[in-house]
Amino acid sequence: MASKPYRVLARKYRPESFDAVVGQQHITRTLQNAIRSGRVGHAFLFIGSRGIGKTTSARILAKALNCLSSEEPTPEPCLECDNCTSIARGNNMDVIEIDGASNNSVDNVREIRENVSMVPANSRYKIYIIDEVHQLSSGAFNALLKTLEEPPPHAKFILATTEAHKVPATIISRCQRYDFRRVGQRDIQQLLAGICDHENISYTDEALMAIARAADGGIRDSESILDQVISYSGDTITYEAVFDVLGLVDWDVLHKLCDALIAKDIGTMLGIVDEVTVSGKDLPQFMQETLRYFRNLLLCRSAGDPAILALPEEETAAMQQRADQFSLTELVRLVEQMSELFKRDFDVQLAPRIAFEAFLIRVSKVAVEVSVDSVLEKLAHMGAGGVLPQDAAAAPQASTPSKAKAKESPKASEPAKPKPKATAAAGKAPPDIPPPAPLPESSAPVAQAEAPVQRVSLEAGNLLPAWRDLVEVARKQSLNLGVWLGAARPRAIEGECLVLGLDEDQADTRDRLERAGAREAINALLATHTTNAVEFRIDWNPASESRDDAPVNGQLSGGAAVDLAARVLKDEALARIVDVFKGKVVEVRPLPQETTVEPD
Image: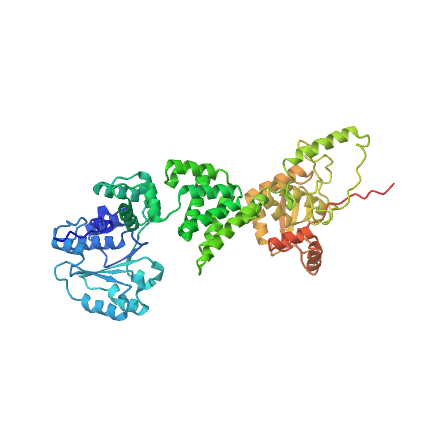
């Protein structure tokens, strides 16, 4: 007598009711409520990745609509009547399942249109389940439109697809759309544990967790992997068996690769890649595991809760230890650069290995890599005028000897001779990006943080130079405020009110300066750093008194722009910065006035 044929776990444990569907409660609850209230649509569109319950839910919906245990459709089919059992077997005459990949022509859809008008034989509804509906031809979609919009009262359509973007909008608009989600690892692990208990299979939580992680949210994939692991290891499932069956690389190899990357040990990293390749492992899959590994490191470094990884405790502790040796920016850059590798089409078998080895060498040899994030981080901490601050560790050491020297020197009270201007050849900052100018009346050393605030008097003769100094003070307090103030030009001082001029094309600047927070800050700046102004007003659309080639807030205009920009870019350091960041010269600030000292 022939033995009973074996049924794979994915078919044997296929859900038969809405309550048995895992991870899709947002859909099963909606469908059950619609059946209870009698608000069942005529067309449904189930969207989601493979193996997460789209076709299974379609069959359960068909059972609920055609179950013979009640006079009306029921949200809980009996699973025992003729309709329920025949739908489960797939041979019900009134529930027609169509594969869209192999029945995608206009003639196939025309056949549906001809048969849909026929009343069901033994059921309430004639239900059409079209799987992979996105593979229908454009002509087939057009032929389906009218029937899908106004089907007979006894007809229902359930369309399922993994690629919703390929379904025409005209089809989607005629259906009730249900988006299926990937199932969480915890839910998959619990499902697999229940199957193992029912099959009398012993297991470890780590093994089931590894299967759930490999399934990547797919119920059917997880059950297929479990079936394969049981065939490999028998009645006991272990963590090592899962790795062997899936061809995965052991975590120790990934730990060694990470340690070698931290130590910049290129030889060890290339040896690991060679060992993985020689052992017959799939290199693209190893690259994916490496990407997932560094993604987990990123989560450890940023989330602060390693439990989010759903890994064994010993693996979580090992990854947390390694994650602490990277900065957050480094891990983000590693994950982003490694993700770029998977966007390439490798036409030959050698290409993935070469690309992966080149990636490992690049991230190891580049000691300091300038990224946009690091530049923005530095810019956020920069002082006024766009000058990078001096090294924090060196600044105190440099100031202490200078004070001592000033006390010992007999000429300490004599005025210091002006230093020559820095040149690009000497490795100094270019002359057109000066440090912030001190206020004219200030004679206190910069190092004295507690020096009293020096105040200037805004007069007609010194209005523009004094305003430039006030703008520099504003830049130190708020870079944004300094930038917007620098776009204005002082026109006059009327009593205690400073009049600022703006042109007609500076409406955005006017709006920003007149905001409540900005106005309060500017008034406070005037009251603190001037002797005769406590507020300001904006003179809108004044007659321009500046020459066409004069810089206003350093903004270049007229024919002088090209010449001045060319002179600035003669500085090698500045030209290199402009080239690296693909920038251009848009602002030039004047140097602070220097006192000319006649030689003795």
